[in-house]
Every structure is written in structure tokens, then in C-alpha cells.
Image (tube, rainbow, N blue to C red; front, side):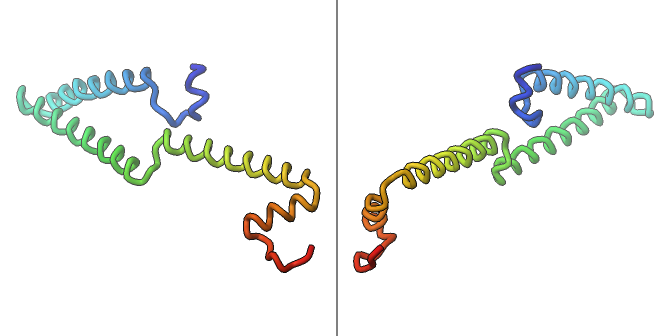
Length: 122
């Protein structure tokens, strides 16, 4: 899918979420049949399969909360990359503009910013 290429494959799309949901539903059904085949009867097989699914969902939720707390989420990472690129481009542009100024104007700006002492001669 073309939309996925922009996320670097690390994000979850609606299609991936739907597939994941159907997959978990299928795992529940397969779990029921596996527990039934292992000798669990009716309700016991269903309860055992449900317990396994609850553990999976709790693990999944825990991993999500961990990513939220540590700031390791796709949106936050993308925002950091954009901010770093913006800061870098801005610094480069300002440096080019500063270098294009006449030396007297550079000195005046540096004095205004406190980068040069008023007593020093340049």
C-alpha cells in the first residue's frame, strides 16, 4: 500500500488494525478448539481460551502504555524528526544570511546579542 511507505512500516494503519482484530478473534476460536482437543470440556475450553486472550490483550496494552510513557510512539518520533530537520534548515539559513552581511553589520548584530564586548575592536 502506498500510504504505508511514508510511515516506514512502523505505524499501524486501519487495515492492519482490522486484520489484527480478526486475527485475535481467530486465535480465540483456535484456542477453544485446541483446549477442547486437549481434553477440556465445553465451558472449560472456552474459559481457558478466554484467559489466554485476556493475557494477550493485557500484554499488548502494557506494551502500548510503556511506549506512551517512554515517548517511543510513531507520532512523537516523526514530530522529533521534523523538528530536528526544521531547526537544522533554520540554522543553516540564518548562518547564510549572517555571512552575507557586511562585516560592520555582523559586528553590530553580535554586539546586540552580547556575543562581542563593546570594548573589543574588530
